[in-house]
Amino acid sequence: MSVHSDFRSGHHFRAAIISQGDEIVLGQTLDTNSKWLADQLLARGITPVEQVSLPDDVPAITAAFRRLSASVDLILCTGGLGPTADDLTREALAAAEGDTLVEDPAALAQIERWFKDRGRPMPVINRVQAMRPRSATTIENFHGTAPGIQARVGGADVFCMPGPPRELFPMFEEQVAFLLRPPTARSVRTLALHIVGLGESDVATSLSKAPGGDMMARERVPLVGTTASGGVVTARIRYEGPLPASDADALVRRTADQVRSLLGAHVFAENGTPHEELPAAVIEALRERGRTLAVVESCTAGLLGSMIGDIPGASGVFLGGVITYANALKSSLAGVPAAIFEGPASPGSVSFECASAMAIGGLRATGATDCLSITGIAGPGGATPTKPVGTVFIALATSGTTGVTVDARRFNMAGDRRSVREWSARAAMAMLWMRMSGAPETRLLREVDRRASEQCEQ
Image: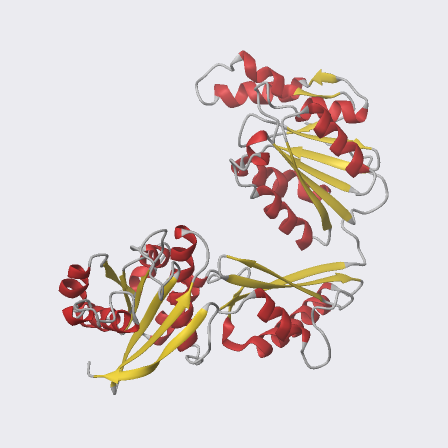
């Protein structure tokens, strides 16, 4: 199958990405394709300026093609190329072009061959996948039955590709990317730094007071912005301009170094590195220092251990842990003194004393060098006047040459039960990260009180 060779002489400066499907609009499927495509465009010096999610509706998709083609040079569309009645990208693209659909013989042969290679006849329903607008051409799909379509709508080049990532990614990389025409005298470079233990407003305040001027000023080059998700703030640095790629990379790197100098150990990783996620960064820090980790969990019920265990290679440093929801198990498995729970004057299971004892007991039970413990009230029940829902105590017990040091902190976590548990697990990892980074006394996000670090015999 052929592709258009009569591209206009201009370059692709601005791009739009369309994700098509009811399941995306309704939130039933997470749209990861748009992020991936945006990263691919930026790496090639083309700026994505809009991402659109559309339902399975011909007028809506047609209108989007027409509207976007008036303001961008390039449109990438994913989804809607299957064989069923709700796959409508072909019809919408033809309507946007003022064209009619025709059957592409080469595309039909490819689909038939795909089924034959798997020992099956092609179902009649799949024949529709060989249809394309008369003025368009098809892009062969080597990984599925849905050919892509290459067309022009208004002033934009349009590439429609299948939605499944296992088909989309290779089609883009092998058959679409080389057809893009990024600006020759313009670079787009990005870098993201991931930050833990600070709120987005705290990060923004620090960056706005940087020596030499506000790093978040919208006219600044490179541009610096922040986003927050799941207890992690990301500082995003972007350069767009005429500098050669190497000079643009150096400028972005200098800005990243300045952000690191302002935020210190709160920066735990940057995008594109093997240890970009907080659990992975913690595991790598433990490995580099020859240390091991155990966990003792109450209200998080194993969530912290699960987050750590999800990382490949975690077994090299993560020994395991125990879940001690019941007070009896806190005593029998983690060695928490029963006196902590007994009597009206006792501190109770949600306290500095209990969290500290859980962490110390975890060290002794597992032989790890470090142990994190979590106990709290995730809700919706269990609150008291002095300990509302979201009250969480986290302790870190660390063994060293002089014995065991225990750092215990109280947090007020916001949100529903799931949010409280997730925030608690990440706060625990943040405590360990800050200690290994040399900033153990740093106050963390949502921390409200701290018990002075104490030493005890191992």
